Length: 414
Ligand code: NIG
Ligand code: FE
Image (cartoon, rainbow, N blue to C red; front, side):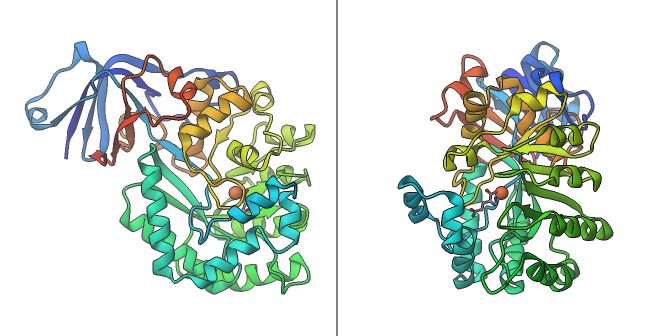
């Protein structure tokens, strides 16, 4: 199906040619066209420009016409860090935290990630698929057009494969672009004495099986006190490199263990969380290929400090912002809310948030040539807003769904 969208009040985040990412002070700049049109052919952005210059060639006369009615058009959000495939929700732990326990104390009692693992074991693959599909359909309606999903609530070979198969079915059966990450090293199951002992199993048994089944795009590990140490993280980075799979690493959520430096040395695609950063961590990121990814939804929900987003930008670095959608530390995948939160709590201006949630998160999924901006040749994953006074209003009005229409692969979804 081919389409022309007319009467766009502002076409936001346009690019002449795909940028790798946006960094430093350029993060405060977003290109746009006012009073614009957009042509989509075979699911791909074909052409865009000002309404005054709109011409239709003979074969474009048959294109379906959509009237944006003076709404704005954005590239869909790219959410580069989620744990969307999970079993039950964890509201009891939430109440424990309200009463004063910390995230780490709850984990020590056998709650946290291990709690989610128990609920995955009970569910069949079909049940897990249905729950996950429902969640993904909700996120599509909130403007997300590409998403990374991690395993890591299995922690044994059967359950990890169950999760990865669910992600594969989501890839096959939904219009959203999905990337799959193996996070076997998410926590240490209680039957193992040391992280090394469990990681041996991850590396020697799980990874070969998962590779054989061709189930993943990326590899991850949770580098943190009480979880996996620097040595463990190095082993994961080495095996990923050997297999030619890019890595995305959870680190610096509660402590800086030196993982940022290590990850950049191994050209990790992204390092995620970064609530706790020292000077050396920041310096390691300069001139690296690694995208620093911040997860404000987790800080909001756990009541831990927010990442110092302004410092990254001040040092000339790029930042990406993702939802971290998961049942324990961030039970919300709504990127509109995450965007508002980034303004309110991390003191980012809307332009910085737009870059951080589109072009830069596309990079953090290896999708910068296909998604993340309005650019000829990129996939037509976009949303049209309701009539809004300015794009600042999207971040100001944090409680209302201001999205009117969703288009994925050139097809109208809503
Ligand atoms: O990114 N930090 C580790 N993993 C998740 C939380 C997982 C959970 O609590 O279930 C995160 O916040
Ligand atoms: Fe996470």
